[in-house]
Length: 264
Image 1 (cartoon, rainbow, N blue to C red):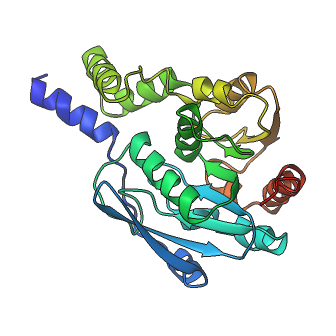
Image 2: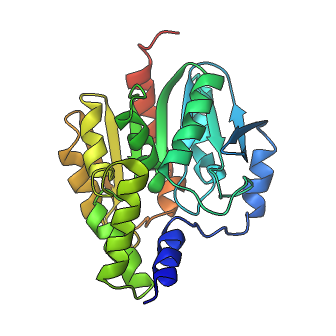
C-alpha cells in the first residue's frame, strides 16, 4: 500500500459519517436556546434547556447532540440545565474530520459558558472524549457512560477490518496518535483515562445486544472505576438505549443523587 494510502486511512479514522439530521431532532432543537462557539475555526452549534446547575451531553461518533433528547425534559424538571451540542464535523457544526482534542476544546468552552457544570451524560465516543478531558486536567464530574468503546485495541482492530487494512495501517495510526497526543492510542482509550477520575461517581450503561460496542467494553470499563455502577440492559442495542424510559430514569436518579450536594 503506497504511503498516500496509509495517510488516507489514518485520516479516514478521524472522519465521521455525517448522516442526514432526522426531522424529529430538528423539531426538538427548536425548543432549546441556541448558542454558537468556535473551536479551531469551526463553528460549533448547540442548545440549552432549563436553568440551574448544568448537565452536559456528549454524543457519539457520527452522532448528534439531539440523540440525547429524551434526557432533557426529565433533567430540567429535576432542576438542572441541560446543554447539548453537535461536535466538530458532526450534525449542524462545521468540519470534515475531528478528534478528542477538538472535542476537548468544545467541552472547555461549554464549561466556561455554562458554569457551573456538575455532570456529564455521554454516549459511545462521547464518553471517550469526556474521560480524555478529565485525564488532561478538567475537574472530573459525575458521569454517565452509555455504550462507551473502552478497549483501544478492539477499536483499532474493528476499524482496520472495516477498511480491509493491514498491520501497517495500524502502525501508521499508532505513529500519528503518538505524535498528536504524546501518548499511544491505547493510553488515551477510555479504559485507561477512566482510571484518572478516582472516586468520582460513574454510571456505566451497556446493552448485552450492542452490535457496535460489545458489552465486554462496559464490563472492562467498570474495572477502572472504583466508584462506578454497571447497568446492563437487554435488547436495546447501541442507539435505542438512549430512548428507553428505564434508562432515562436511572440517569436522572443518578444525577439527582450525586449532584444535589454540589454548590454553586
